[in-house]
Amino acid sequence: MSFPDPTTRRLAFAATAAIMAVAFAGTAAAQSMVVRSTGPSASKYPTGTKLKSSDKVTLVAGDKVVLMQAGKTRTLSGPGSFGASGTIQVSQSMGTTVTRMIAKSPTMRSRGGATRSDIIVAPAELRAPNLWYLDYREGGTFCVADPATLLLWRPQMDTEELLTIEQAGKSEKVALVNGANFRKWPTDAMPVEYGVDYRLSGAGLPAPVTVRFAQMDAIPDTAEASVETLMAKGCSPQLNRLVDAMSESETAGG
Figure 1: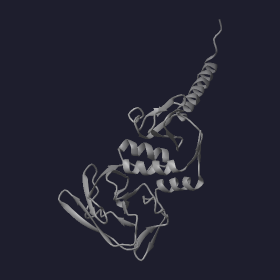
Figure 2: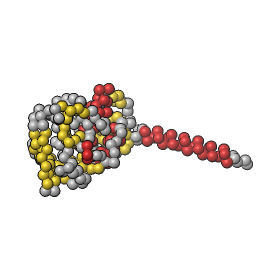
Figure 3: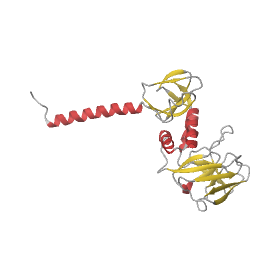
Figure 4: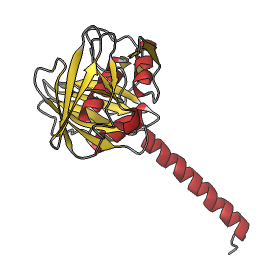
């Protein structure tokens, strides 16, 4: 019996490894992840669940599951049984909205010493147009990569209001001036600390809101990476905002 020479064996092993890598990559790429789950079957498909392309999602009346695959979302509504993968088309305008939401440095301009955004927010949405703006109406955990550039955001700009920030017995008032959606977080007087609670009140809030910061090493580059980071850190307000924008970009599903 003859055996291949060492060079031939190495080439064969390399080819086999390459084939296995391609197969594995294809399997990974075909995976979907649950990014939102509501309704009676929510406990069956919790957020973060990974599904293979061959898996079936069985829903009952009142269920709604949002799946993400390759940076796009697909919304499934019960009752019914659905494949975990499907064709998704994304509208160009909403795709642009998602891109703006995850941008690391959104376009800004100054007007009379006040800062505002070039992004126009539809009145019906009234949501911060970028993930890394702190919409102070949303309580919960907020992911921040650079406290020095953290901006507070509000939906209206035609009033002058005072936002009060309290933490560990300290209090700081932040003036939100007429003509501005944005105001820098007062890092000098109220430094950003991770894992502690900040109480925000005033500035149009119907009740005080509690915010806790979670540290990110860097701002993710893609919508998919942003979802995974926000999910891992428990930053639900930002995750919900991004999933909403991604879901609205769906124009067809298979």
